[in-house]
Image (cartoon, rainbow, N blue to C red; front, side, top):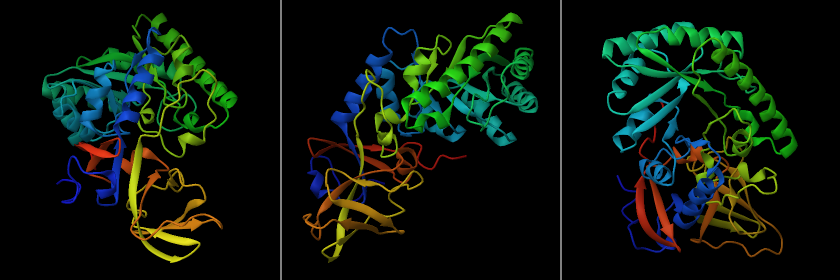
Length: 372
């Protein structure tokens, strides 16, 4: 269903019913171009992570700007984006369970699809699912380069798993996945550099071992919005996966960015309405926990100094108004910068796409709720 019966193309932003997920198209397009410019001539492929936006329209725009394809986290995300016209998807996750593996194998008939593995038993299950469907699945070994989430140990354990994949009739060893997720939000540039230098060293060691064993390791992929320039310069990564750069959020905006790095603009907002103004130092918005993810902190009020989003409950966002600040008035609409863009997007069915504060398009969040 559309965002609401009150939202339609051509109306002013202030007429949009709330809460609404708003996308500034001018800022989005500049972000796409800045990323394309940043990787141009580097010899590194861009494969943005679609878990940030879950939107076929945005994925197609990224590919039109030079990306080779996109990443997803779940089979259902991949299914939704392939159905939306995306022809090359890497599922950057381990897929376990008979039903999910069967769906993954079926999807290989419709698009180029890859997946990760960090366990020999899972490799056997992937091979069986591919054999049952009569397809060949591309599999990358995920190595733990410092995030301590999924991933087999670098070096010999990863080589043993690569051998297992290469020996499987219905699988093809496609390379290494070496993503250091927790490094993306390290605030200090020197600490981020150190974390990615260590990750690149582990990836280099593992790639060298695999190739010395006579197995081609054509891809080393990873990186995010906070570090992609480091992986691009490492001489081991030849594919990067930044995702949040299309939107940005309050958490990423807390990073200290190095000189010479591209600066991405805030393009994603939650539009909210002041539903109560009970005191000079307090107002309440109609956007609470169900309108913006708070796992990385509360949203920030955009371009309203002295007005702080101080507390959230299910359907209410409480604003703290500093002394001497003009308080928002009842019915006034404010833009919020989400604390974390990815889970905020998943709360909505539609992006309300605006240009110069007018609604230009309504884009579905194609893979909204696709978590299986």
